[in-house]
Image 1 (cartoon, rainbow, N blue to C red):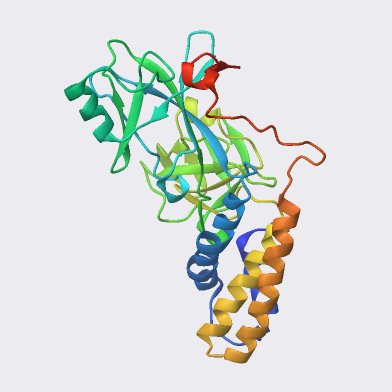
Image 2 (cartoon, one colour):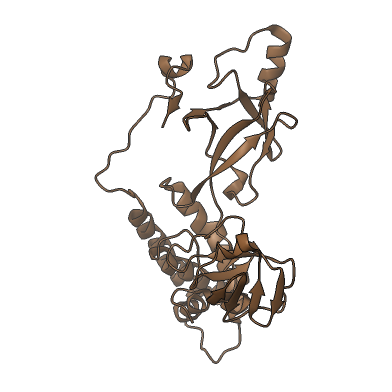
Length: 314
């Protein structure tokens, strides 16, 4: 069993909730797949994103096509939200693109010029359902970047994944390969150290499988290193993107859920009081992320910004 994997965390939850190991009330898989995931997404991830220290933040490069002037918000973004949207010029400089209401564009078309100068070439966007719709329609493709907080992969038991033991061209040998993994299955590669980032955002696809050996394309083979962990797409045997200090808080919150499920109201009340204290302590650990580094305050309503004079930076 690897240090900090979900099986170890499940054992810790049982200790926190003082559930006898001989009592078959909850299996490890139930603790992980239901209760631990629930606390991770409903409590820990919102706490992490609220401190605004970039723990979950990622940036995607996207292309705004001429034919379809829209970009889909990634389904793995927390709350289906974006932090920023940028245009990227040929030199790699960034220009912030402003969001407007769709009604503002409609009024522009009806009554005259747009009410202010946007960041790049008059380009703005509005949000509709889960898409960014850009206006006006561009005549050439545009390189864009979107920044957002990425949701950690769903936690699964280690038996639902494997570790890379060795590799020879295009064949990867694991210590375990679930029977559900078949030809065409897409898998995620998880780095073996905290914070257990994805080694590649696109994952790998099984070409063929024999026992614990999986064959992949040459391009996918190059993504994998010995020691990496492999899991189903969108799954992980480890808590991703978070510091180790968050693990005890996650386990304590899960212990509260266990005690409530056992109808132990008194125990749950005591455990919850400790859980709230642990969350407060975790916030103090998480921020500031760079100590003794004052945050730079930028007036986003300055005359220079309004005129578009300082939209570009490295």
